[in-house]
Image (tube, rainbow, N blue to C red):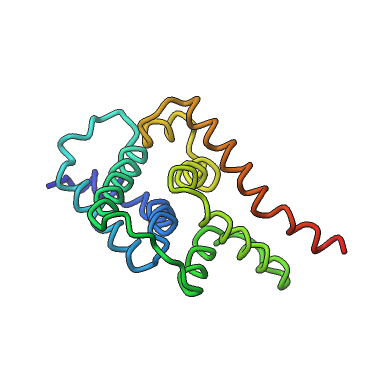
Length: 174
């Protein structure tokens, strides 16, 4: 069992872990279960955490590995979004975004849908780097790949988002 100080430090990352879990699972209740399982595993294996290393990256890595384990167990059945899940995703990602008018809300919904369409590896890297603000080195550690791969996946994810949203700007120019 983890000591109280480790637990306190680990719990500081709860919101960030939940944000990623929502994007991975595309489902609020499943995201909560994933985060809970992540913390159970982190506390169970706290003795393996090396002091002086990045706890946040370690927690994200546990969450991602736990997700992949459960994902494989479900035999890669696709997760389908319903409007309620999309609202939860959008609210989680854009919790600080101002909503002065309907346009802002519509923009967020379209962006949330576009992000949800990305392949898991692109979506995860984009969220970790751009939404959660992790350094590229941290993202590489979590994803288990070189920094160059992280950079290229971010680039490709943004390119795909541009493609998904290319007509979006045209609607407002008319």
